[in-house]
Image (cartoon, rainbow, N blue to C red):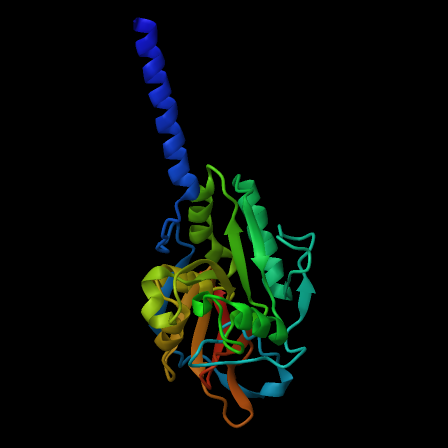
Length: 289
């Protein structure tokens, strides 16, 4: 009788363990992006009177497009050759060898996947990257549920700055998703369509879709709890902002071009991105923390 009782409890324990594992493997938990360990200070408005500005011709400097807003309100297609698109094969885990990404986006994705592997995260795979216009048109035309497929001209995949990252089914899937949500910003990536931001993005929750915006922007977006639409709106034209990341301080401001010229800080390393709304966001290094 005792042996039968022990056997019964053993069977129950096995069934319970299996059910618990099934919950972790097959459930699709919703992740609210919340800061882990901070590497940046949240956006601070500052006085830039001590900085000398000069104007430079726009065509002398490459637009990075890192902060370009692309959605139904601001559709955008880049001219062919505007961004350098390179093969991702052999550099990050892929679902197919044909996937390509913008050059800097791929470099940072490579660093992120390396860091993930060092943390014991090995069940991440990139399932989609850069798409040419014709490919996006075909996807949209053939999609049975267009809720998750952007209309051509409104997809970030057409920039080469977005990648879909899937978590392979395993007992560690939950841990993997959490790691990605909490660490992607360190490499310049943001979860583009969080569940709590549907009203702002106009897109359903897509925990697999990550967008490269670079730093310090990704860190500020992550720590502030913004989506990209909110972040761009927070950079009010006429104001200057300061953020810090990885030991450096940055001056950020959003401005319209003056004719074909853009005001930039003299003697500073800087880069800029059109934001899709008719403005440019300028990022300049202004010192160490």
